[in-house]
Image (spheres, rainbow, N blue to C red):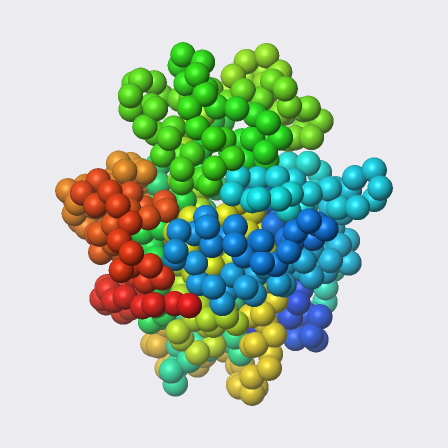
Amino acid sequence: MPLPSSRTHGADVAVVGAGAAGLYAALCAARERARVVLISATPLAQTASYWAQGGLAAALAADDSFELHLRDTETAGRALVRRSAAEILVREAPDCVRDLQALGVRFDADRFGQLALGLEGGHSVRRVVHAGGSATGRRVVRQLSALVAEEPLISVLEGARAQALWRSEDRCRGLICDDGRVIGARAVVIATGGAAALWARTTNPPGSQGLGMLLAHAAGAALADLELLQFHPTAVIGVRGREGFLVTEAIRGEGATLHDATGERFVDELAPRDEVSRAIQARLQETGARSVGLDMRAIDPAHFPNVVAALRDAGLDPARELIPVAPAAHYMMGGIVTDLDARSTVQGLYAVGEASCTGLHGANRLASNSLSECFVFARRSVTDALSRPRIRTAPPTPGEIEALSELPAPARADAATREALWRDAGIVRSREGLSRLLKAPHLLARLIARCALERTESRGAHLRIEHPDRDPSLDHRHVIVEDAESISWQTWS
Ligand SMILES: Cc1cc2nc3c(=O)[nH]c(=O)nc-3n(C[C@H](O)[C@H](O)[C@H](O)COP(=O)(O)OP(=O)(O)OC[C@H]3O[C@@H](n4cnc5c(N)ncnc54)[C@H](O)[C@@H]3O)c2cc1C
């Protein structure tokens, strides 16, 4: 436990994490004249949000509708989407796009000045808003960060890691950082991102190891669906310095194709991610190759400048050669259980963005729904938090420090654990491998194995070799991790 220092902060809202969800939550709270402390462990460029290439899904086109966006989300999610959460997403995402524009984010427009909407896998119409082509995350995060830096109501604690949550009288009242700083707050919003960097092969920045999930779990909050980890089909493989670099789905949306070693196309490139990942994995197993080839020679490089530049930096020429790609761990659908206002099961503790599990992604996230989710539910979290009666926000006294729920050790996974997750909880999972993973030294790795063993079926991103089919009796059933690693099931609608 870090020794509490004399540096204390009292705030209305403490936001942990400065990706898309955390930055926007902080700005929405400040707009309501709330005092905010924003804690960020890593520099901007190391958030998943900064790396996002695709964009935000929102039903904005004339040929689109909430119903169509909802239908695509539910189809991708494989009978596990929590409809109430998905309905909120599709209805509120367009307004979040407009709000981001009002905050100065410049999304790409067509020659008539209308938003230029992209097509991605699983979407039946063009629906994805971009900024700077494939630099969406970077552009959005930079703009929101600039606004946060200028906002006097927001204090930013950079390079600080939330180490423990302070819980007393059955509610969360603040947190303590690894440098000993203590923050008392009416509400703590966990916006710490996902956990895909727990897997050895990943598209995520190294910090995405589920620290917020561990913190919330330590404080008694329920987690859910930890077995549901999406693999992105097209991460660069076998190229030094660019291992895991993601080549956005939008490139396939514009016509890029996938080919095996013989040059043959073998999958509908615009099918949902679970299907494309599985098809690639199967082809790799059949042929013994390490990668398949992504042919983007017909793609206009001007539309995806940062992808093309990154590939060229790595010595690949997408205008002339196929890019070697294979699936990698990409997005954690599971996380901290939240209701429709982003409230966790602990009073005063909220979770937004990839750290949360609203249930809206079901068993397979529809591409570009996650950034939209970050904004929609970040706004909801602070609206709810600030509508509740005020409580004392003074930092804890020494006696109260005893009530801290600390990150379990080790908080970060070592290389062996990450390899074990890739091997035993990868695209294809077996009882034997998952049972082995139950002995991992890392708590989240063990919880992932517990949940994956519990789900005795194959659905979306979760493929069990002994249970190759979907079990209809598990439709809309979610695996819940309560305290002390106890597992139960809940039906969400
Ligand atoms: C390469 C890539 C491309 C993607 N493309 C898209 C896309 O086009 N569209 C889309 O919708 N989604 C995309 N995604 C997914 C999407 O980017 C993420 O789901 C989303 O950005 C997560 O945002 P977040 O705010 O929840 O977390 P993050 O952006 O990951 O931010 C987490 C923050 O929490 C901080 N943090 C973590 N632990 C602690 C701690 N203990 N104390 C203090 N701070 C902490 C980190 O430092 C960081 O600031 C992509 C993901 C990747 C990796």
